[in-house]
Length: 625
Image 1: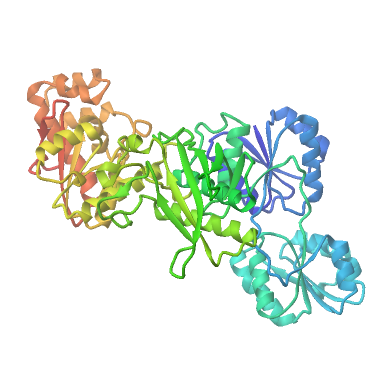
Image 2: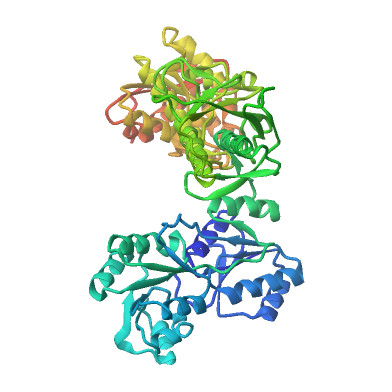
């Protein structure tokens, strides 16, 4: 069982991640004002001391604590750490993402330090964006020489705290918790009050820090930032949903039924980061490396090995083993090697030159968004690599006016693995593709499969094929190729179980002539209206099939056969011969009923294929009642 301490944006995101498991967890907040949607989570409201948290953890068999509270909730962080130490329960800290700071930004270590700095300066009118809980902590300022304004949330509990502290109502500025409006509200306050200094906390991106910083900088108003307090060293820190899920999977095996993984693009990026760090520092001996994902969060990726790239010591090669989680990915467990070598940089050269080495395929057909002849390294991984390497150079304050970096990605088993993928069909030859949009592989990733279908459809369109034939896999395609012997290989696209999504994408791409080839097992599911025919989504419905047989005028024996049938494909051999054609006609017309609207401006042909490869035509003369 898991206990989240929330009340923040990060708390809400943590709950969203845990909801994916479909299992009970607890979500604790001090008050009841935060709105959070929970289906499997149980809401707890009210403060708990260390003893109460320990008692709760024992009674509910809590095995993992997630601290997603505000960065400045120091007492709660300390309490959680105490409970963790006493009960030997690990803690994941869901930290905020913090932006880079302007060189002009001022910092204070804590509230006392901030009060001291302001009191010894020439600042007189102060706008504090630090929240109602800090009014008491900054009492020396507003009871001293400074004219202080505090911006607080417009809610009764906040007003009550301000009144209890004795802070004058006329110096309170109210706001609503809406970050889109927050930037405008801050700007309006600055223009109204004209403060000499703005005081805020190191609240991270989700706390609106960037908007506050931009608003003050544009008006030339100094910004004093109170640094966030340090966290216990043994907290496991993540700063995004992917990292939280991966750490939860590791610390609490079985909470999620399926593990997430990392893409080949993330593997290559991690290798590039480790290799560049080694190049800049004369070696890299850590077991993992931080990688920035496209959503801005940082995850740590294990490094299998790192070695000099050549005998001259120019560059390094880092190897990362692909972890696909529980996704059915042929690259799982295989090595992705990335080499970074410096080279002299001329005026027209790119700072980072990304190339494909052994085992990385090359594009041989148009339609993939990459030039023909180019290494099959998709734009997402390219941008991810470049962004991460830029960050490393920036943090090392490295000048690179005359030095560029050649990044070569190789996959030792890539050519062999490619034969088990869609690559040969879509025109990627000689190896696998380096792919990944989010950087993370979702278990049995629907999204990844649908992306691959779209790519295949785009290639089919780019080849100018007069017809695109969509089918579930190699077996049905073999029969359909005999039906359309003149069509190029790229005209045959596997839809897997995602018939509806494939037809919608075909319509978006304005493909005019589509043939859908179906085995009976998928056809009976589609006929009932299930556009995703995966066995985990839907099973054969005998009641529906009995209705189809009756509507088709089949014999009474057909109904008995359906009742005794376990797998739909058995109907080919079990139905009376006189019933097969009318039954199939009715199935096909139901399929048209659900599929034709998805391709409104195209011509859809649906073919039913039996296990011997015999094809039943779609007959459009049979009208549905």
